[in-house]
Length: 295
Image 1 (cartoon, rainbow, N blue to C red):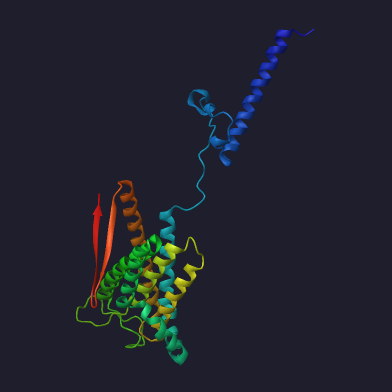
Image 2: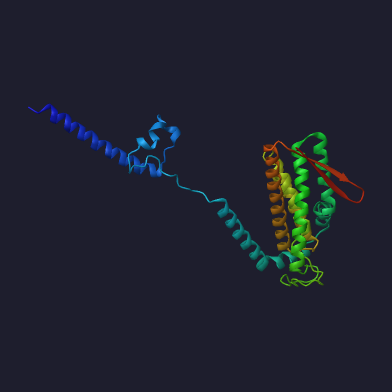
């Protein structure tokens, strides 16, 4: 007849071995399917004093996606590759094709959309939108107008700097796309990047970012119009295709940077319970803004 004490002891050893096996299995599974604290019935079990040493109850989740820095670097590399390929293989053929097939209809479309890339035209339009947002107390319209003005000014400064450093010859002046004067102050060749395209994409990105979350049709329409502005510059033989691509990047980056600064300042003002009052001042030949910070 078996001793009851030995039977109890054996049962305890079996339970201990079974528990160790289950804990080891749980540790292996946790590396692939980490258990979140919210899914446990007793969160106090996760405290340090309840967890035996050498046993990881929760495994660190593995990152499956790229970091924002890695994504930005990937986009930059891809964009640079596409631009380089276009410069080497497609610039001159596209210029020759568009000029051989240039039509009256294309010229009329170009005449309609081309003003949407003029800084002197779009800045007052953005100013009117901003003023309308203030009068109507429409925060989205106010933001879209203000960000558009800021992004146009930033893109204007960037395009001017690049033009004056690169001095690329326009397709209307040469049939070869690789002629640059670089930093020669006396050169009038300022093809790269396209200022019209930069302005159009600055406004398009501003509008698409402000209204795109509520209306999915706004971004395609905004970017579609900006693309037509860029194509009009190729049609008019004023820019190479790579000039237009560079202008689109400048406008996009300018708008995203302006929006980031706008949101950051606006958030800080809300935290400090301050208000920034901005009033447009439009004249017949000039315009400006006056700002008042209310504590």
